[in-house]
Length: 143
Length: 300
Image 1 (cartoon, helix red, strand yellow):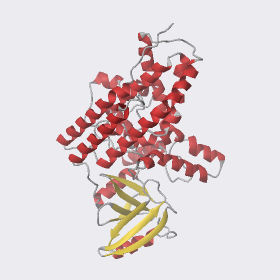
Image 2: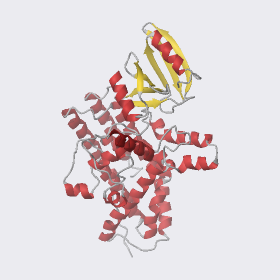
Image 3: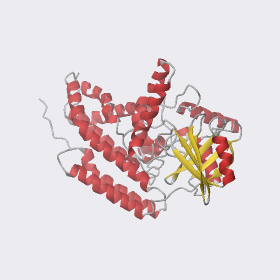
Image 4: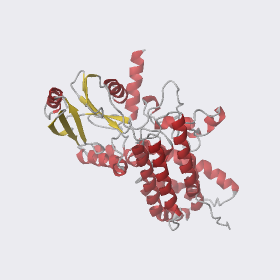
């Protein structure tokens, strides 16, 4: 590589612009939409020891909570672009929990110390939000 | 006396081909209706590649000086004869195999390499999702080639050849190649296995150019059509921010070392197997594979 040659940086920059334009034009700006089946499948793949018996998916389909059948542990499942990621919550992982009333329900905000995705919010019916908030509250033993 | 030929930079020459091949793969994926590319994932991969390029330019001079210094203590003078090019093709590839295996089996090295595996997509842009931090120290593993007697410029050239070779194997649009190629060369099929998180595929196929090293050292796994590859890392990241992609494992390593109860624990967290924990909160790839094998045996 020749740092003095302007083409050394110019060609990659033009290439990046062309590639991103092509991805956008071919429908690359999509997002995963979670449902119960997808949540259970991803838990089975990413955390096979976590057998969920209770799942709630937020109104936008971008995030879900699952509770394990045995120990009451909770996992977060969330869309990362058009793919999905899973976080099993360990005791102490939930640093802040808040509920915000909205016309469509209650937004449950969960903050963890995860460096790559530390804030999660789910729009849920009021009763569901309260039920999961109780489970996730620090000291509740679920999270 | 050996004449110093002016060797081309394979990576610089290949950049236009990289761009055209990515555009071609996007078109093929569109025709086949494959969800191969997602815009934020692609942007993150390309940003990682650009950052690696800039950082590589910044430190290239220092690395070359260090390699030239090691070359002063060379055992042989292998020069630029045709057979030196053949010999370094294999010697550099064996070095790459060792580097790559270390990068998956030691947390410190994994912290620099993990970002290459952090996409859940597997396409040609994933090949460009390169490290921002590894360039600072990974080069030390190539110094023995200089001590053996390969000229520093030849080592740099061959590293470029290896990098260019490894670009095209990051694709799902190519299936299996003829058996003799799959037996000797690293191929898209072999490298899909390497990027997969299915327990049976974890920590397999470290090869760069030739798959023979994995076959020799017992780390080879063939792609099984009955079990499609799932790509990414054991704990997939939830960000497309290049800074977070580049540094997330370093942050996790630092947190583990800071909270470790003893010096032994600190060393294990820093240099032991990735995923090692003292409280059972996470698993190494060996533990994941063993648990999977136990479940398979129990299901029979």
